Amino acid sequence: MTMPAANPASQPAILVARAIPPQVLARLQQYFQVQDNQDDVQWSATELAQQLQGKQGLLATGSERIDAALLAACPQLRMVANMAVGFNNFDVPAMTAAGVLGSNAPDVLTQTTADFGFALLMATARRITEGEHYLRRGQWQRWRYDMLVGAEVHGSTLGIIGMGRIGQAIARRAAHGFGMRVLYHNRSRLPAEVEEQCAAHYTSKVDLLRQADHVMLVLPYTAENHHCIAAPELALMQPTATLVNIARGGIVDDAALAQALRQGQIAAAGLDVFEGEPQVHPDLLALSNVVLTPHIASATMPTRIAMAQLAADNLHAVLVAGQEPLTPVNQADPVARARRWAG
Ligand code: 8YV
Image (cartoon, rainbow, N blue to C red; front, side, top):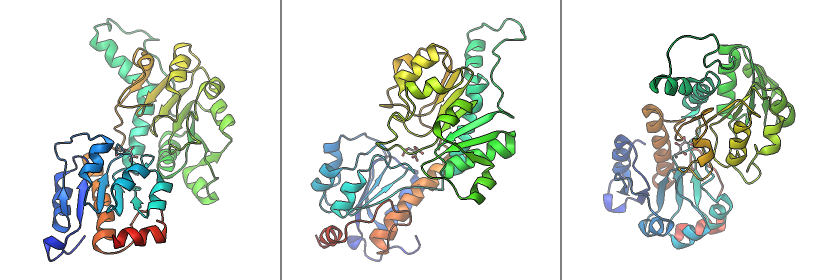
């Protein structure tokens, strides 16, 4: 964003669905008539549609569902910019059919999220939170050779399911920083030079689950990926293995995972995302061999500012500069788009 629009009355109207970093909000206010939600009120779908009346743009987070009903109720809406790389809150075909553009926020969170994936892997394999709870409960009386022994991380085999930008950033940390053997499974195999940079070997999902000491999930949530890890997949893993999910709730069958952990079918899990979050399956809460975090993989302030700024830049590109989104997730149907833009 460079030049403010000359006449505030002619500025496009947008809604910012949740609280965002104030410096990004201030920049948006230079170009748009902004209705913000810095109180971070969580609206129902009906309330969101009400708040969106007369707005051409929406800055959303992963929490707002953008579907056919909302789009039909908001005929002036032209563009939704998600402050998240994942966009499973978008019904993309419905947006495309309605002539509404969507964007996500890739790249800006890749390294931060990969750092967190590694932190969760380390905490899970080396039983860090379990150790802290043990200490805080006053159970640490003396040293013992087998007290809270965990699994090796360095030199072990990491299996990554979902080898997009974040998966690749994790592979580089694993191979080059920890001397790990990296296996990956992905919808499509990566070009040879990318495999080489990541020192990663393509395998089937079954072989990956059988061979990996640690399995990391970094794939997008789609209908096909629902319960990609459920009882049959957990049964393939080693009893000493750990599972880390930094992708999305619903990719893992949380009830089946709790059972596998309880029965010692796998050793431990690190979870940043949950089915039906912010609710967490009670069986997971009851287990000590799970590290649980509240969907914070991208939570550093520089990264959250960059995510909000990229969403703002996408709105600016479309609604102020008359360009295409910088990081689009769809190409709106041209006839429906022309109709909406004319309305
Ligand atoms: C967000 C995420 O914090 O970008 C994503 O896809 O999962 C997180 O970084 C969350 O979706 C809120 O928008």
